[in-house]
Amino acid sequence: MGNPYFSPNNSEQLRVLRATEPEAVLRVSNLNVSAGDHHILKNINLEIPKNRITVLLGPSGCGKTTLLKCMNKLTDLYRELKVTGNIYIDNDDILNTTASIPDIRQKMGLLSQRPYPLPVSIYKNVAYGLKLKGVRDKKLIAFNVEKHLREVGLWEEVKNRLNSPASSLSIGQQQRLCLARGLAVKPGIILADEPTSALDPTSSKIIEDLFRDMKKHYTIILVTHVLRQAIRLADHVIFMHDGEIIEQGPPEELFENARTDKLRAYLIDGN
Amino acid sequence: MQLRRQIIDKLNGFWMITTLVTILVLPLVICIGLYIKAAPIFEQHSFLELVFTSKWEPSRGIFGFWPFIAGSLYVTLLSFLFTAPVCLLAALYLTQFAPRTLIRIMHPVIDVLAGLPSVIYGVWGILVIVPFVSALSVPLTGSPSSGYSVLAGGIVLAVMVIPYTLNMLIEVFNTVPNGLKEASLSLGATMWESVKHVVIRGNYPGIISAYGLGIAKAFGETIAVMMVVGNVVKASGNPFNAAYPLPALIANNYGEMLSIPMYDSALMFAAFLLLIIILVINLFFRLLIHKTKRL
Image (tube, rainbow over all chains, first blue to last red; front, side, top):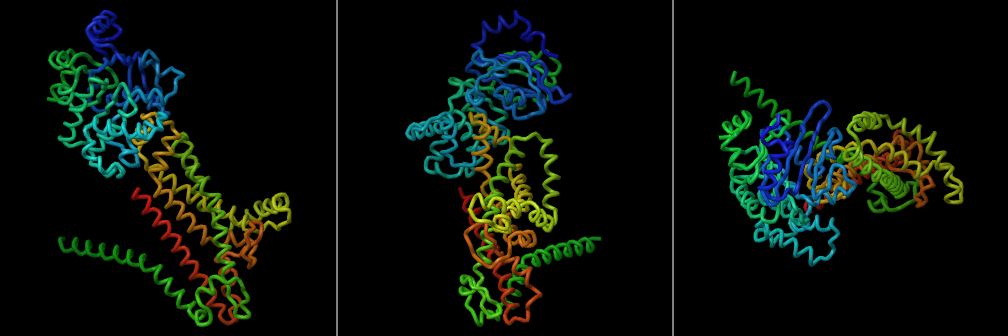
């Protein structure tokens, strides 16, 4: 059951939200995902504000990752999933569009729970997306590789071993490399699926600091079940439970004045 | 109680080490045994003379193994040329593109094919492939062929090796984490680009290993090849001509004509040679795997 105060079906609520919130870059409307009889996402409606960190918060198995994968159509890989509804990016409904799926995906960088560097060198990992975009100028590629490795604070650590296998990096460095690789294709949105769950506290802090800096230029959607991380980073929180959005809004409002028992229970357990 | 557990622990350790040592020592024992049995022929002919001469007249004590080596290599090469693309594409399709139900159907089919006795492949080769090759020879080469040829051997061998190589490639490609493919797709790659750059590129060692084992199996395969390859002692570049692979030489002649002096040693040398060539093939593929792992 969705929160009646924050239900997007409530037009007055939406009007107020739109007046106070920044422009929405991504809008989900009546999204449902099911696998056979199992209803994974139930009538999801939400808006993602531009240049903010939106945290998808909720217990494991509540559908956060599935929702994230719907946003860049990675759900297409899983034949058993049935996806209905609308996801608007740049006023284009990506679930019902004839546009090229690779082009849609390049609008969003993906950072997974654990880093997945491609089985090539550090340099080629960052260059990969550029080459897919058709960039052939070696100088331009080299410029962008350096730029994005600097952006994630990795350049000084790897500048002398750019041709080493990406797998030779530490797991924290690999995650930053994956972020640089994603940024190289110039996405407007970063989809981060529990990106610090496999990292040590120091590496996690580096990623969190990067997100804070990056939100000037990117819209970040962060999936986490760690309440403290949500408190540290979120500009906008969407709390999910059992495939539904229970509450959404500014963090101070949600965390201090939870309106539902489910969120209250989650906050108590999380603290 | 404590003593009993310690004894069981020691015993288990002992038998595990014993079996391991046996497995490791076995190829060495076979190799030494074959060498000792082949040794008399080295008193009359040098190793290089035996390997690189083509004249085969056992009754006159002339043993040139080149036609047999060339026949084995040629049939194996042809089978590899047929097997490699088929297995790679089939394994990629089954693991990356096909619905899971297809894999569930295909697995038992592949296992059945792998388990068929080689004589069945041989009979099928005589009934289907040999006439097919014979029918092809005039339009393609201008001269007739009985169909018992290197090409027939290569095709039959390829069909035999496909289930082994395919099974291994499926296992290799199944190890690719979904996250890696998703990472590539999310950067804007198409499914094929992701397969090419992530699934194939990331699994060079596994692919090479699967091909290496397939080739080693093909090189040593005897019955089915012997039934369709023609068994004529002549090294020829024409795939429509007959050949005589090393395993067929041993299988056809061992136990017969041993009254001919040195013939026993010559056949033992053929077996020794077979072992050495398979060892060299394996070492070559090990080297390739090592090199690709460093990339």
